[in-house]
Image 1 (cartoon, rainbow, N blue to C red):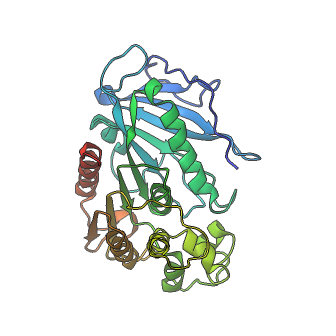
Image 2 (image 1 turned 90 degrees about the horizontal axis):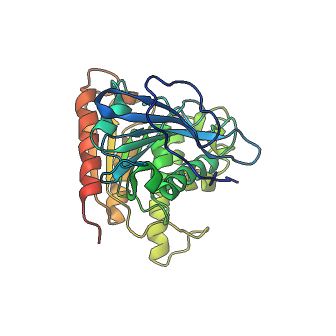
Length: 321
C-alpha cells in the first residue's frame, strides 16, 4: 500500500549551491544550475506502509511559474531510472549523456526523477504503484510547482522503461507520450531468450517474487506488450482472466533499442511496437545498429537524446481529442 504524502508544499526561493538532504517535509533542498534551471531535491512523495520514504528530484525550467513568479506552466517529464528493478536511484540517467536532466529542463520541461521501492524491498506491482503515486502527487501540486499536469511524458530506461510503460498504460495515467528506452516488454519471452525461465536469482524473478516459469500470469501482468495484448482481447470479448483496466488507446510511444543489446534483446522492442500499433497507438520504433545496453558502443548518444527530447516536445504540443 502506498500512502501518498499530501501535505502542503512550498517552493522556496533559489538557494545557490544548496546541497544535501531536505530539511522538514515541504522545505526541499534547492540549487541552481546553468541556464536558469532550478532543482528541488529530496521531495518526499509517498511513505509506503512499512518502508522508507520515497523521494523525487524536480528540475524546473526557467519558464516555470512558481510562487510569485509568473509564466506558462511547464510540461512534465516523469523519469524512471533503470537497474534491473533491484538497484539504481533517481540521480542516475542511464546512458552517458552530460547533464541530461538539466538539459531536458532547459528545453522547457519540468523533470521529475523518481525513486521507487527496489525488488529487495518489495515485489511487483509495488514499483508501478510508486511511480503512479509520484505522478498523482505532482499533479496535486502542479500550481505550486508551475507545471502542467495535463501535459506529461513518461520516460524510462531499461527496467525503468518497463515501469514507465506500465504506468502509462493505466486508464487513469493520461500521459501524452512515453519514451521507452531498451526495457523488457515481455518478461516470459525475455526470460526464455536469456535462458532463465526458472532461475530464481534473475532480475525478473526477484522483481516478481517468482520465476516466469512458476508464475507466467504474474510475468504477463508485468509485461507491457502482454498487457496490451490482454487489453485488445478483453475489448474483443475474449476471456482474459483478470479484468483489464488499461487505456482504450495507448499514448504515442518512442521505443528505442540497440541491435546488439544482450541484456534486453531488440526483439522485445519489435514485439512491443507491434502490440502498440495493433492497439491503435502511434509508435516510432528506433533500432540502433550495433548499440549495446544503455546505448554503449560506437553510438551517437547525443543524437538519441535530442531525438527523445524532440519526441517529448511534439507529444506535449499535440492537440488531444
